Amino acid sequence: MNTIVVEELEKLDRAEIDIVDIRSEEEFKRGTIDGAINLPIEEIPARIDELEKEKTIYVLCHTGEKSKGITEELTKQGFTACNVEGGYRSFLRLQLGRVLREDQGLQERTSEIERSIIKKFRKPIWRKFTKAINEYELIQEGDKIAVCISGGKDSMLMAKLLQELKKHGKIQFDLVFLVMNPGYNQDNWKIIQDNAKLLGIPLTVFENDIFDIVAGIEKNPCYLCARMRRGYLYSRAKSLGCNKIALGHHFDDVIETILMGMLYSGKVETMMPKLHSRNFEGMELIRPMYMIKEADIKAWRDYNKLHFIQCACRFTENCASCGGGRGSKRDEMKELIGKFRQISDVIEGNIFKSVQNINLRTVIGYHKDGEKYHFLDDYDSLEIKKL
Image (cartoon, rainbow, N blue to C red):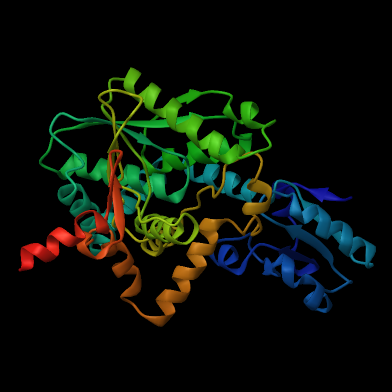
């Protein structure tokens, strides 16, 4: 199979070739290689006649993996096809490297990104961020917070928000921008580091071999991986003198969790804005982006032409990053909430409010700290009180 690296592809005359980007339309609109056309992978069988056999076709996906199969299939059907090695991720890494080499331009880009948070996105992002900080009392004087950065849009924005709050807020607190490398591939790891430099986020890095440990686990490897990563983050944060870790969960994560609990676990619960650690004494978890909607995070990202990794997991990135890998319960909730938004603009807000406005006299039962209550426990005594 023919392959080409991004650096060589950029040198080719676009009039003589076709670059076919097989990622989703949403990803394509966010950024692609100059001159590329979008032909999502699932649409190729129906639209293959749109491709010209007179031109060499260069196939692009996110990682260079799914494009291999498409390149082979096109070759079998008589096209001259070539796989773009490393995919769009390699192009992104190359572009980030160029920006970072321009020191003056880098400083201005960082300042523009910071200004956008306070000005253009003041209402949907900054105000909701500060409202959550104040309403849930997430930060106190003298806190030292480990800002846990995964490399995605959510944790990167959270880091910038906390930076801005530290600069302009009244409360005195310290930040450590903590990044764990559990075994990322080199491309993803480079993009995380380059984005941090672009955003002006000084990283504190530590490494472990979690990905290797869970590689042989067949049952619930994602659950085990998540639990291990959380434990490592708590442990490292505490060793650095932090009393809190901050995670980048947002409004959509909260309402998805509520619906998943109701529909698949038969219980009413939510993702809390803050929690005391059960295993690390004196440590607390906070979620500063609790009230910020994912659509607004994406709008901030796209406005600033930023590109973050989507799924850094070594085992799932090739499908998830290319537009596959759907079908999880959380994905189902995202689709369901999307339908609710088409029906009414109040439903998502009411889902959020529902766990803050529970009338205990209108529920069959509840439990707290091991104690259970059923409405029959005091049903008759309530009737006597009325008399």
